Length: 328
Image (cartoon, rainbow, N blue to C red; front, side):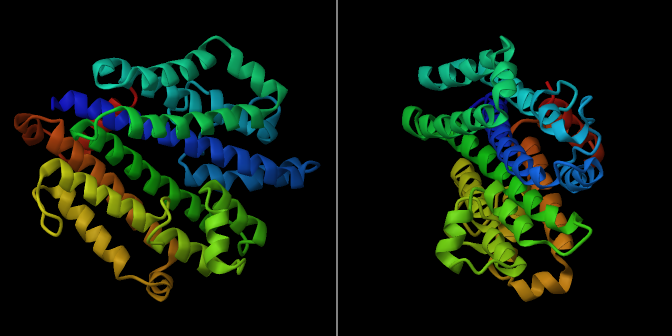
């Protein structure tokens, strides 16, 4: 497969997963923020840790202040991770590899893009933001189902899967990390919000029977073996995708991305809550996020860059090059 084809499929998948994660986060936190409806200062204090965890601290709310910060996170053209920006980037990636996608996949993605472009999205938001956010979440789920059902499960599909699970692992770690930016001990509402953002409340209740605590929530989202948004599940899926692409047996590695993923999977498999607490939850999550970024960089260097380009790029410039690619 051509490197640019792989790169576009990978980033298309990441952007769609990112848009869904952002939609869930906005929906959950807008609902929770209603508790502070009469206090602008409390609303600002409520949103700031959330924005910090998703690297959106520079996003500025419109005239209504932080009461309408969700609108900026959806429609901003200057914030590269706004829902609109993610959908626009995903659609551009898809356009570059149109021949690799099924007709159904292209139609689904193009329709949601045009929904934003022609102004229908802002109209729906003004009638009720939950309608629009539900639409975005349903779009992502339908897109993933169509990807599984309508395109061959060959190398291109594996890059779609790789992008999806790398992004999902990052999203889960960031949502869990919001608890570390609270000025007070996380409340029951805070824990419920994190579970809802990761669409894991029902699965959590099945395992822990409603025993809501920081330890149980973090243990579930970090270490669950069979929940598809846990860190362990995502890293295992990344490992499987990478080895399926390279053809190298699991447990060995052919490139740095596979080595980093294998060591991260081993760390997750052989770490428990007590070890997390001894290091610190934020420090553990920060280390995970850093490693996920490095895996993404090594994937780019292995499957997209030419050998001569790799030699001419240092660690810093490689990361900058990837960031530029994300925003094209």
